Image 1 (tube, helix red, strand yellow):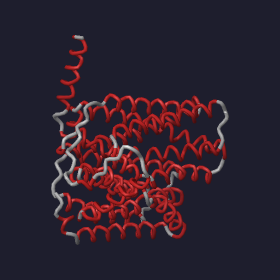
Image 2 (cartoon, helix red, strand yellow):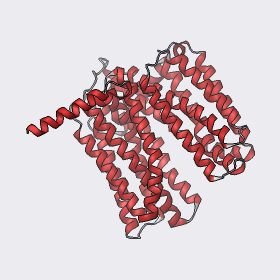
Image 3 (spheres, rainbow, N blue to C red):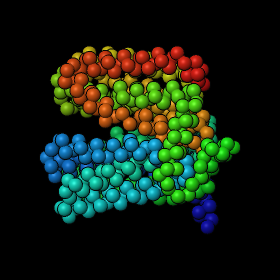
Image 4 (cartoon, one colour):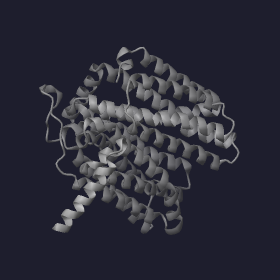
Length: 431
């Protein structure tokens, strides 16, 4: 017993010293530390599952089209049901929703591992499991964004979000190469097994979180409908109430549609456009694409960590400056003729993007009514990912016509969105 007490004091002392750094202060909170550790491991393991899914689909079908449709089978329910995930995060404990989601995804990935190991995997298995996986992810993401404000104080929201998002990005960057090596050495089934174990670890970390500090519930009765059972009619009504809150809050009303437009202008153009440029313009082919994408990921990670390391002031004006940099960067990117130029421009738009994401998320978490936070975050996440399939389709069509025109159109649309925000006094005055 005395040994456990001594160990606990050592842990508290270590994290107490770490907590002196602004970015790392949330780690002094035990509950947040457990969340951060579990999700970092889960995202790292997710790289093994993601590459394994890609590889096994190609092994089973030999078709790039089949791979695309399997990925879309996961992406579409993830986007469509994000709003339902927001509603459930308000009605029930977000920690329990995350716990159920992680356990369920652990089972799904374990089933995939078993099917591959038994050499019984078929294409329809991949479609079914991809749909279930995407659906569970739609409930997980809003719950995560709702849980963070319950684990850290308001003045640590940006640092907390920065740590969670930043370490997720770092795990994504560092997990791909080991995953590829493991698959080459031991096969796809082992990679799926690693992913399943990572979900189990994340679930265990969530289980250990105790005494979540719920924020006070608003006094107005109609802002939250406490329902213990799932009813479709009530859920749709809750989604409508979330839409009314967003529409009735001047800053949300302007900012969330802007997020949708800007993410539409980045998702497809960067993914499709950079691949096209690496193939047709740059020397080095796929290696050039890998370099540029690594720069993009590293810069976005740096932007996320920067947001949690400094005290942000005049957020509205900063956001307008970020949109100006990102829009101009996209326009110039379309004319880049070499990897170095493209990497520098991608670094600028990705770093400012990482900074903007953390800043916006933390501000919404601190501003939204606690009982409506899940719905508002669900709408924000839907705005972020809901138009991705369309963005890929439009970018794929435009890039065949002219890559430079595609990037220019994207950049101009981002600049126009920035001007639209600049014309709104509420956005300009955000602090």
